Amino acid sequence: MRCFILTAALVLLPIVVASAATYVVSPDGSGDFPVIQVAIYIAVDGDSIELTDGIFRGEMNRDLDFLGKSITILSQNGNPAACIIDCQGSETDLHRGFDFHSGEDAESVLQGITIMNGLMAGC
Image (cartoon, rainbow, N blue to C red; front, side):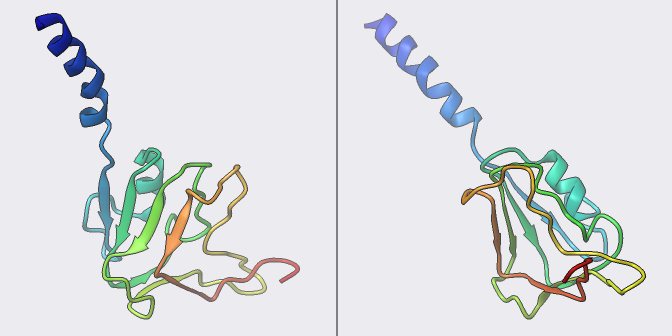
C-alpha cells in the first residue's frame, strides 16, 4: 500500500509543479516584466501574458515574436479598445505588431488587443 501511494504521488507531482504561469505587463513598464518581448522570452508553453489597459509603444513592445511557443497574450480586461500596441510604423521606419514565423500554431493565441500603425514592405 505504501508503494502505491508513493508511486501515485510521484506520478501526480509533475502535474502540480508544471502549472501554467500568468505574467502581467503594463505600458508604463510596471508589472512582472518591463516590456512584452521579455515576458515572451520567459514564458513557457501554456503560460499567459496579460497586458493591462493602455498603449504599448517602442522597442520590445512591437515587432514581437512568439518564438514558436504555445502561449497566450491577451488584454487583461478583454477590451481591445483599451489595450493597444502602437507599432509607430512609417514608410521610412517599418514595424509590425507580431511576426508569427517560428512554427506557431493554434496554441499560440493573441486575444483582445488592438494593433495600430503597423507598416511593413509590401503591405
